[in-house]
Length: 585
Image (cartoon, rainbow, N blue to C red; front, side):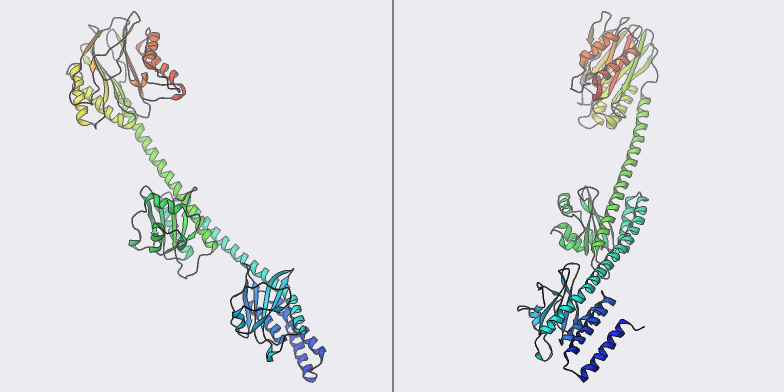
């Protein structure tokens, strides 16, 4: 079977033979046009998107009308009429930027680039009324004018070529779409593998290393860098291929934040606003900046150097880089949260140990004192607190009692409280209550920072005489409830230890008759407040003690704590809370 191209050649050969025998016969001209149109459509239908086929089709049209040179422009994806083929080697621009007429028409004046080669005739090619291509032809050989016959042929040629050219444009568009799809599939596969790798790494250094290697391998670049915003500004967090001098000092936080907020997507470094970030990246010969953002504001930038091949970054490349940066940002944030969580767990373990140590400083069991009932309890507002209470057997029926409250809460207060507790333990029974308070004051003033102090109540109980000798050093004055239900305060003492270098303390004394009690509390009791900021106060303590005075010392302590809890309600604790009760049986 003879191919369509062979048929055209056979027609062409037969036509030339007829022309040689009868060159002036009009039917031969009509037949020549038909053969040209057949050759045109055959060429374009066989290879509609091929540049060579477009060139052959243009040569057929130009030969038929006797034009020595011409150019074919086809509308591209951007909507421009782009040069696709030439014949006769004309020097024409890469695009045709003129409105297309409806019919074959002269190109018109003002197109110097076409005038130099004598290209003057414009043939529009339309599909469904829309311009899709154009042919520009030069003057005919021998200076002949384009007549009605040539115009008619060119119009028919445009109609015949329109469908094939449109088919070629659609085919090219599909090819580009398939190429983009292939690239996307490849990138998605890469992103899936990278995401799995990133999720398996908990160390930030490992994530930065993986990100850098992925960027260099995927884009075939020789350098990249990751800058992240920290407390000192925007600083280099990881790099590959950068010279040592490219690091520099961190960009100050304010300048860095302004530069990062201007990064709304992958941007050429040359397109960044002039400033320290752009200059830093340009010095490092980095050409693409990608924001590193887990929220609305970027916290860093992934910067990529130019490719070894010199090829520019495509839109797909930019999308891939942005997606990769988001994945890395999420992995870095997870690593940071994991580190914070581990640090919190470590602190919690240390606080638990500190709480256990502090609890071990409190008395394990009530003391055995003839004729007296003693109890105490402490509730820290945080894991550890700055309150403490203790009782120390001095022998011969004598018992030392102490309640202290360090200014502040939490770990710092608990550390200072341990020192106060140790001092009282060491000094108890070696000096009078006043002298003991003086020594504790000197110790705290000499060994703590300015403004650090502790309140202290220290007393010694003589069971035989029922006398309680005490000193109240800046502490909440204890409450004495007598047998008649009257409440008085034990106020003898002085200022809180730790405020001044030297201090003197007055010693007080009270005799506890059967049924009477002394309650010592910290300001966490009196200053406990409701949600609307009403304090429990001295009145609240007095009411609770009078209601509970007939109970045991342990019941008084627990009842007082319960009364405070009921008072504050949903407000919760505002300070450490401690109570110690001595009751004469």
